[in-house]
Image 1 (spheres, rainbow, N blue to C red):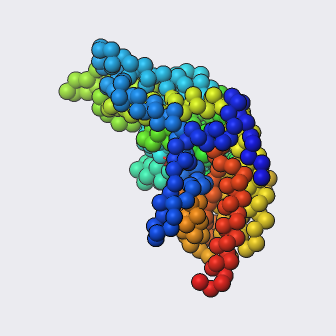
Image 2: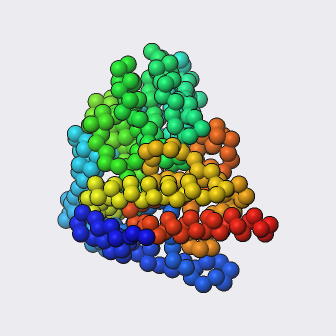
Image 3: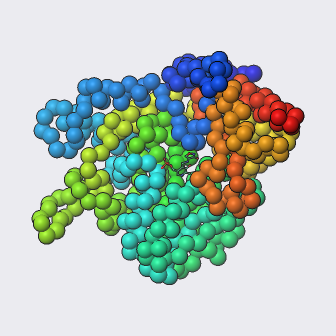
Length: 422
Ligand code: 7TS
């Protein structure tokens, strides 16, 4: 056991864990079992929040709450500064060229719906949208809805049994009919890190814009949208240690400028007559109605928190944890671990020969271990692998090697418990 990692700012892993109140909290289980420590291994679903984020939301509602962009009073100016300040933090965090290329949404799902409804509104029958078979439903269903509306066709880069993209098919799949490419950066099922650089390069050679779904990559990898040269990048604040209800769509200025509004209402207009309206400039053209300013306050604080620990330091620690977890989990008898053999993210989906993933998740829960079980909102990928459900452990920098050892111990115990015919 070696849990003595120290982050860039001198904080040890145990000190970092103290920043997360929920990790200090005992879990009250059903059935009269004594309260247990939480072992949170479900960060791919949502990340826990440090006190700094919770405090920022609290501070916003206790001292700064006001509507943005419209009040001339002090509080209104302060709330606007908080909201727009977070936009700048995000710009810098993903290295976008302009602040107005950062559009606030509710989450990754809304970012992709915005894009499909707005950018996709000009698609015609015969146009092709290229996705992959591993997409989360949120980067699939909005395009299916668009296809029903516009008659465009959806095509898919296939996946193999390791949950990796068959990129040798890319040249055939990208055609003169392809008008858009959307691909996830990191798989929330397999932990695959997709070669998006290659996909972007090949799509751009044919002048096709590319969306990267960064829901699972943005919290665990340094993102540089200019270096990637992606045209759109979507992610969720709640997976980035921020509050729920705030997300981001990054888009290159030239594309966002050309796109019609997603929703109509207050703040997104320049002038309104009964007979028609004109639109506000970027990014507000896409932000109709009162936004989630408290969420922005929390997300800004989450980015400050990450920067204080240093993203590089976080990534190094998570890489070490991921390698350790991969080694231990792949050594467990009777489980099948999905995903690539080599480089991967800290997302480990598995099935057990003797018990259903839901039984596995419920068994682990009795020991305070939170893992997800199910189809992980990626039913086509599961179907391709002929699996209806998987259990999934996912990591973050607040996890420890001893937690992984505990998980492995209890997976083994679950196997024994169920193979004894109980
Ligand atoms: N894209 C990917 C790759 C995801 O993993 C998720 C959520 C989404 C999009 C949607 O994010 P949202 O914030 O809009 O809901 N993934 C998961 C998961 O794996 N378990 O719960 C949510």
